[in-house]
Amino acid sequence: MMLARPMLRGLCLAAPVAAAALLVGAGGKSAAPGAAPATSPAAAKAPDLHGATLRYVPADRIFPALDAEVKSAKGQDLGRIVEVLVDLAGRPRAAVIDFGGFLGVGSRKIAIEWSALQFGIGANRKQVISLDLGREQVKAAPAYEPDADRPVPVVTPPKAPRADPLPDARR
Image (cartoon, rainbow, N blue to C red; front, top):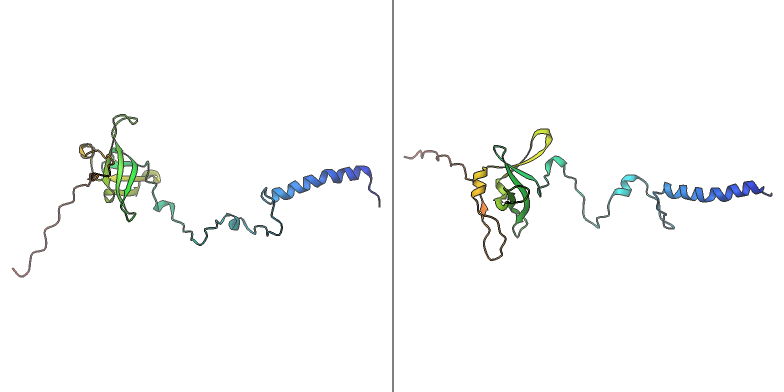
């Protein structure tokens, strides 16, 4: 059976178009010979962690701390977290806050005890980091200047007075 010239030209033009359609259908990548195609989009997105496991943490349970605003309990702006200091076990010990100034002029860094920070959700589901210190207390604190030969001054809020112990029944 002999193909007519116009039909033959149509087949020659259709072959590259069909090959391109197959590549686009495969995600724009050509499959390796003998490789099985991905069976589902979820399987294609699952990373190979080489034995490690993947855990999902709810977004409303985590806070991006670096560059986060810190407010006083009264809502005063205290600055932004610019550094987190950790101990040798990897536990956070202090947050370094860039305090004061305007557009970075006249500001200084203050180390605040990590446990003094409170993390919560404010208006419009905005994450809020607050501190039980006022602007005057933070302003009076010594500046954080990293030096391996000197201890770091870390500001700790005053503790609430302890309640009187229960009277001793034996007296």
